[in-house]
Length: 422
Image (cartoon, rainbow, N blue to C red):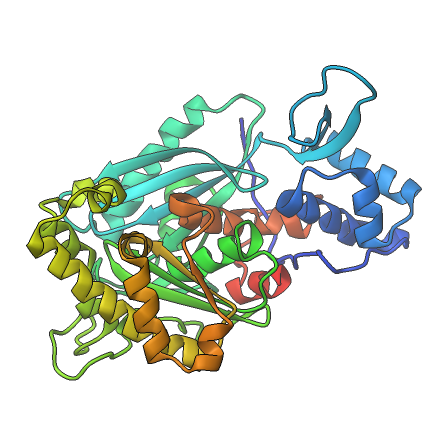
């Protein structure tokens, strides 16, 4: 098993990027093909020729190089991805499951580490529960210890491309530092630098909700949706990401999307940032769990608990939160006019608990034209969404240049990745 470092250029998603038959653009063409297989595989060679505009002989040369490099495998399959048992085999190209990214999501009650293969498939998740919000140093030490265990489990020919971290807070994607993660009580923490020093792997970090919308846009139900609004509800509150016409809205400093801090009422309690009457202060996972008689460690069972008969107290809390969420979504839909609203984490659980009530409130609180054009759903990737998004950061340098092996000191920018994913 080898650790792999990566260069400092971020790929576009070459869905609609034509290739070139010029030999000087070989690296570009390799990137185009590998990225397409990573995001949309399995694919036939003819699919790649059609989407890139490269001729068949060029495709053959480039695909064979990717196979020789261990990045792509070719197998005979039927339409369901299973091996054919009879008849003429249909050959397709798959991303290698030996190319690995380590994805990390620190929260106030746990640190989750995932093993994600090229192609966006989560092979395994390790959740390490904590009694209190971990400090940055504690999070680094716990993550490093888990990764050491992971390295012993991987096949010898596996290659770890790096670590991607989904942070519930403001994250500087240029250097992987965390200016502010209020729930974790992190301020001006050099997260990527500390984790890279501890593990010897390249580290990229981004806001968790931004990475969630990246994953859903590239691998999930938003793949062919131009404008998507994503809200993620977790132990550390509510974050958001907005993709408009294929471009992530990042703001002047890359911190746009803190939709949980949007004020939805006058008065009310203050959230962790000190703001009053916000979505995050009115809609919270802990209050929801408490009303159901559950603790933080029971959060994974929230869907089952909401599907069971509820006490009057639990029903009252659910309705209160659903109505508050509906008010916020109504305003957000009117402002951003998305095609799709994706509710992750416990927000998706709330939606499934009272879908008619939520839709009724959203319809009342948004402009009719905007509401008629939008669909509300849970993530296709469900609980894997943040890990898949974080892994995309770790894979980005390989996808940019499959031939590179030098260490990069500069991480990629998330907005560039998302622009290429449109």
